[in-house]
Image (cartoon, rainbow, N blue to C red; front, top):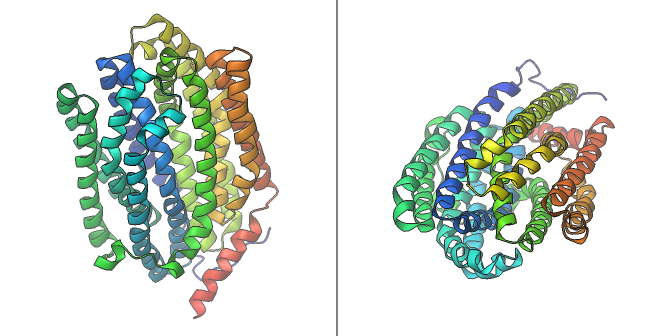
Length: 455
């Protein structure tokens, strides 16, 4: 594998841990607030806890639409900056605002109009649906704000302004937490929705200020509604396959949630609480994957393909070690952790058993979090969805039904299906990386940036 030569090859590349550290803190805070929200909802009742979880599953599915822009803009801006094309990076950053407006508005409208339908697809029990549907409608305005915040934060990170991004996220979470603690005892789940909207509005204001002060980016009024096709074309070439992969996984995961829904409210609550803990376990892998995407993007823009290859190997080894260790700790503390959510002995026992299965699940997931982001950063965005879709449908969704319901293994059967899917896709992604199937895409991206330099 021969690396291309960049005109500014002496420029030191961004350091992975300098990006991963703030990202990890950011993700911990985000998951922490989600866990607190689940706890506050569960204190109202286990039915409220399940309703909170199911509404957030739908919200997460809708949020995947934002990945069409978010995944692509991170890669294209990072490659442009790595190749010395700051004006191209700025144009792409401004172009994402209008795209985010249209996508955010569409998803917010879908949450309002289709709340009942989306939740029924997940087989929400009637008592859970009664709380989850109005909660999902109340969350819709925050989808609009999240579309802008997600894109603007992706741009900030690609510019390596991860500490400033962390400051915005910390502020938003503190406001959300204070609002939820104040309003949820009074208004129930609607109180959380109001607090979320306030925090996201503040985040948008802070991002606008940081764009001006740190990036010298000043969006014009037209930027908020225009869809500049030429500017966004490279973003969509990366983002559409990335979003398709996320959407395929989300649909398959929703199918598994629907399977769990047929097991009853107790199974739904158990899964909801374990998933909250799982989010904490996978945080370092997520932070590493997102950081790899940014650093590899810069390295590809600069033509340093050998450096990118070595970086991904080191990052994967580190991610596997940390994720396995975190899964082991939560497995040992399973009963104690579950008792933080509920006093129901059957939920505590079932959740503790699922945390043991995480010892198999989490290392496989790390392959996907690190290597898929690395492939995307090189421009090799289609392979993950082309190869992974069959596994998601057959192993994740089909396996959840076959093992969980058909064979009667319940939630452990669903978790086995999760682990099998993650390992299969992860090993396929790793094979793509070590056989250097991504190299032609990276070279093409670098050549494109060099041609822009010559214009």
